[in-house]
Image (tube, rainbow, N blue to C red; front, side):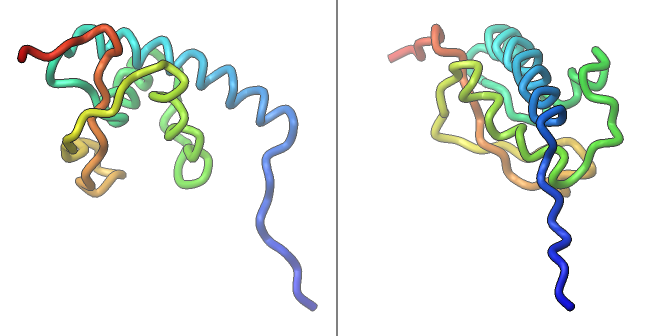
Length: 107
């Protein structure tokens, strides 16, 4: 008999993810403000989150699916460029560059 193997997050996990998103959003905004015109990618946020013990490094795959919501939650703007990830687990894939909303490029 077919059994569905997909495990949906429990209410407790959803609340924990929301709290983590809030912490990561503050971190992303801080990093984007420092980065200026170069902007940030999510692997930059992830590396800094490891250093500050917001993420512990054991998460992988679907456990990190909420990371795509972090830049939008922080209010960052999309830049028209991509950059390669420095994390080995990202396999060097391209990631969207995000810029702080207060940054205005030189015209």
